[in-house]
Image 1 (tube, each protein chain N blue to C red):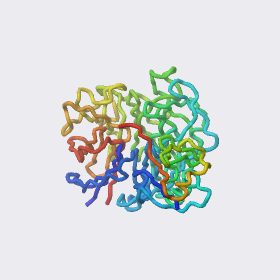
Image 2 (cartoon, chains in turn red, green; image 1 turned 30 degrees about the vertical axis):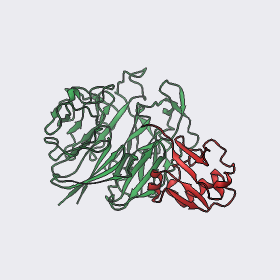
Image 3 (cartoon, chains in turn brown, blue; image 1 turned 60 degrees about the vertical axis):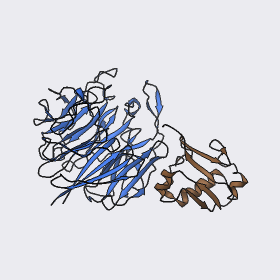
Image 4 (cartoon, rainbow over the protein chains, first blue to last red; image 1 turned 90 degrees about the horizontal axis):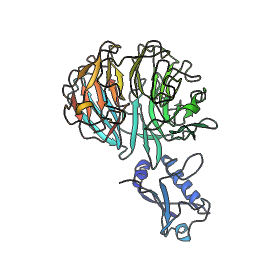
Length: 98
Length: 371
């Protein structure tokens, strides 16, 4: 199981908590985790990445294990600590304004 | 007793204000979608409990919401807005080509007859339609593709399609307006389009009388008389008596003819309302006095309406979507401000009172008159 954290506005939109456990079949990558988030909460389609191109939205960032993964290839394996559920995969809105 | 339901979109959520036909006591519901920009929400004329809302965020993009119970509960609808074919380019602020990029939905316009059919005006400017209650949206490509699209430029707020006018008296006709491209008309339910801007003069474009490029802020129409259109342009208040084929200025004695909002009285198609704003640089009322101006003669002769509105130190704006009218016997006029006030006049503008004073900045106001 993968531990994911999403920002409060998206949790409200999806009517869920900001943290959840998701079953993500291997390989565990940013793409497969985001696919799993969108499959679990269809309302979040298009809110983290463009629906057509799959590109990350400009003011959304992806963190894990103290690292910014926003610019990493979407099909690169996530750290073992994320794949094993020990560390969360974090989706958050960029700091942009007061 | 009839009721009114006022749908208010703000920078940080939507609010629903309800009252009876006296329009004295109001119940305020909200914020719905707290923290999100609600550019516009509107109800279906065919099913008043069917509402659609445009919810957006610079962070998380566009979400569409639908309610089937008059706004008590909402569910996300489809939010995929893909331009038809290769999007191409429009002009950027400096005249260079710039790729078309979807940013948000500015305006939702439900069909007059089918609750599942809704038009959406978007930024970068295009017209979309759903016929399945919001599950899927498809562009009507004839508007962007009729030929002038590469010449369109964004206004200060973006290149948004903000006006969509439908009329039961002229089925098949759709009038849209885009900032800053101008006004466009289709007579075949949105398949083919042409610019209708003859008579507009805009000193801020190289050819002031160009076919397109005009910063039209809003167009209003009385539903019974689709041939008569009223326009608040960047500067100038304009009128057409031939469905937009030609326009003439009706600014008359207005103290300034800059502004954003314009609307028409529900029962008198010659009574028109605007909110004059000082200038394109100073987006607030003249002299700190918030005044609606009313013409009972279809333009040119305007009277200031100020009873109940702040007449000192008022420096708010009234945005293009933020004025509406109800259809009660004594027509109600409504508008919202960037200071978070929503005002109502239950007597066609003679007297005003605030329904709410401290909402987030108001982006849009729509009114439903319910049995």
